[in-house]
Image (cartoon, rainbow, N blue to C red; front, side, top):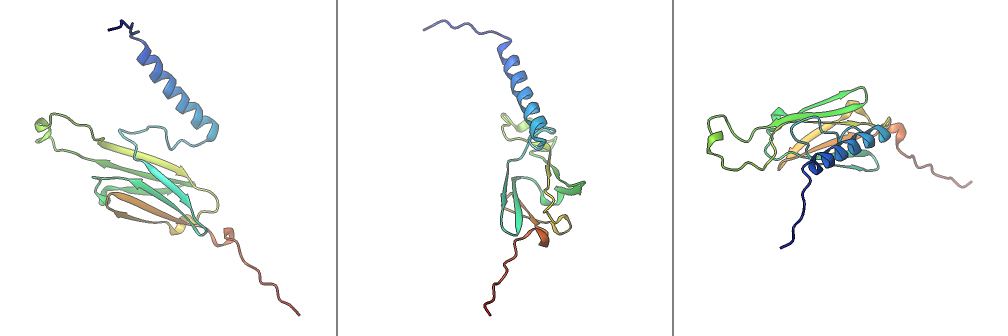
Length: 147
């Protein structure tokens, strides 16, 4: 067995370094959607298709009626809360590993997004948000006629 020396402040230094890195990344890119502003942060996938953007967020255990979606100044905001237990049943738990509490995510939408026609559905704990593109942003095929 080897002796290793543990420095008690190493953990705090690493946390500071990680948080500082997140802040610097957000400052340089302008993307604050990954900065933790709540108890937990749901994982989100975003894809771009020819006529729309699709955002999918993992929200297992969240009642869809409690999810709040807002559009404000070009920002899509998703917020809500996941309750794992009631105060009466809390004492029964010996271990709690699943994240719970409030969540908050926001995403800057491009100018090509049609904010007036955003739709959202939930299936099996996955929130799907469809953001259509404006008609002017879509490529238009022009036919060449032969005379």
